[in-house]
Length: 443
Image (cartoon, rainbow, N blue to C red; front, side, top):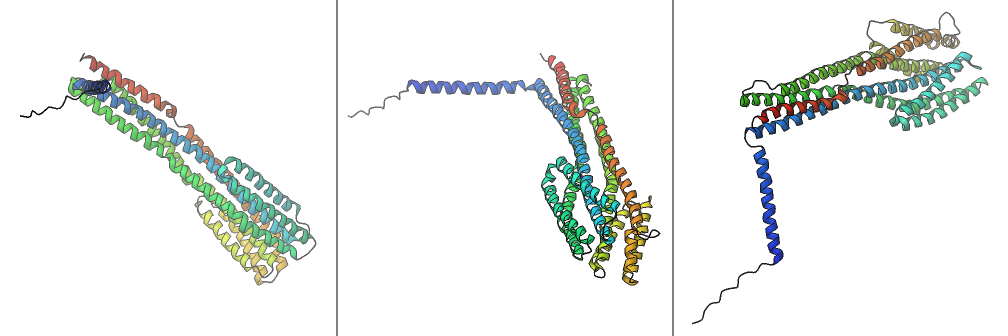
């Protein structure tokens, strides 16, 4: 009978034995660590430790949120100031350019040598525009490319103006064409760049004004969440330890509450001041700048209409459009101060007489005399100058007020921006102190 031979037992190599032993040891260590962690969080002491970690972490998070909130509002106020100043700068460039153009076109009507004071005003306006372009490029790097392109168009514009002057002094009719070409360069090449810069800076200012209120959200949300965690912790401790108040943890909660209230009120106040500035002085600044720009544009078209001598309907229409913008912007200033509106109406009355004298009465020389100041009793030079001076004074006042009010709002912020994190750490230490007192009772 044949016997079945059993298979020999499997043999283990020394390396396999060592690997299996190491695996068992590692598994035991992992289980041991898990067991230690579970034991550390087990029972009432473990729950105390868990609440300690959560409340301490939330305290630090609150400190970071408070710091972020104040940094957000402070930075937005600072950038709003800078961008508002840049916007005023760009609008001043615009005003100086249309002012210079108004001087050049009006002086052209005189023929020969233009009035020295008018020529000097043209030179000063162009120099001021060049200086402001340099300042604006330094203040806002994002505007440098557009400002560089603007500078190149002004070189062309000034060259055409000088050609117009040279031919006009000699009585050559081609001078008027050079003047029209210069006006086209300004209207079609230079001013679109300026308007694009104005729009870009208005958007920047609006963005920063909106961002000022975000700081309040940071600190209030962070404070509420931290106080909820503190409240849960204190209530749980009161139920487990039968002590109604844990003084250190309550002190931490009070610190968070005071920081939230003081910080929230300060940020809300700064946001309210910025919002009020935006709806008053800032809006008045925009309206005054736009009104002055449109007024100079209207003044230029008044002269160009006369220069065209019977074929200036397009310039007359451009005047009416610009005058409509002046009235629209002055209307935004409200009815409390009617002085600018009255001054503009006086100029408009003279302009209407100029058009009546030229187009209907056929007295071109008489119309020119009123336009260039030859008629001392009734002319658009004096009435426009009165509007220009008054509107410039008001613009300076409102733009200064914008900077002053935003600066005051920023200076009024308490130093929670750099105290936020230390406050959060102190609150976390108070939680640890208060919880350690209860943990000692279980040892």
